Image (cartoon, rainbow, N blue to C red; front, side):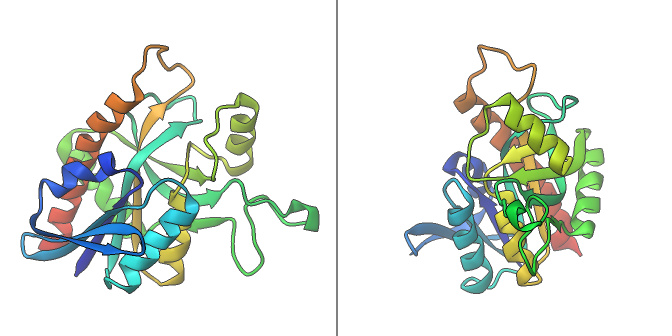
Amino acid sequence: MKIAIMGAMPEEVAPILEKLANVEEVNYAKNKYYKATYKGTEVVVAYSKIGKVFSTLTASTMLQMFACDVLLFTGVAGGVNPQLKIGDLVVASKLAQHDLDITIFGHAHGYVPEGSVYVESDKDLVVLSKLVAQEMGVSVREGIIATGDQFVADETRKEFISSTFQADALEMEGASVAVVCDALSVPFFVLRSISDSADMDAGFNFEEFVQSSAKVSADFLMNMIDKLVAK
């Protein structure tokens, strides 16, 4: 088994790289990929840069050039479910592209012909994440994640996405990664830490949060990998 681990920003993968051995940097297609090992298992780590185009390119490269067998994605997201608080962990049950809109032709939001509105995550990995959460004593919420090439700050737009897709969280990469993995029949898993919510503190420091949440997410993913490696 060869495991791909992705984030969008360098801060999201840095704590993971610290836990790996034999790290080798490979430059390809204007991006950096890190080949490494963890307990004898091959791992490839990369941050894609922000957005659907870059994440699609990176995911495709990890699966086709590096021949990874499973993909785990970690990062931050904005919460649109009022029950979510800053720092909560969300595991994607399925993902949709909220900015894909050809409704003028009679299709649903997020739908493209020969495709679907939602792409479902690998059920076994979702179940495994719940076991890991239980063992770690942390709470994770399984929910729908909506992806788009825009940082959504407008409350009206947030409410539209929430109601249209029954979304719990918003981000800018997950659904495009899901489409790639689904097309290539590779199991995938998306973990997001909520970085902003309806009741967020005005003094909230995003950069500090990304760094702290990345460490929590890294521990979570490595515990999942421990179980994958042990199988």
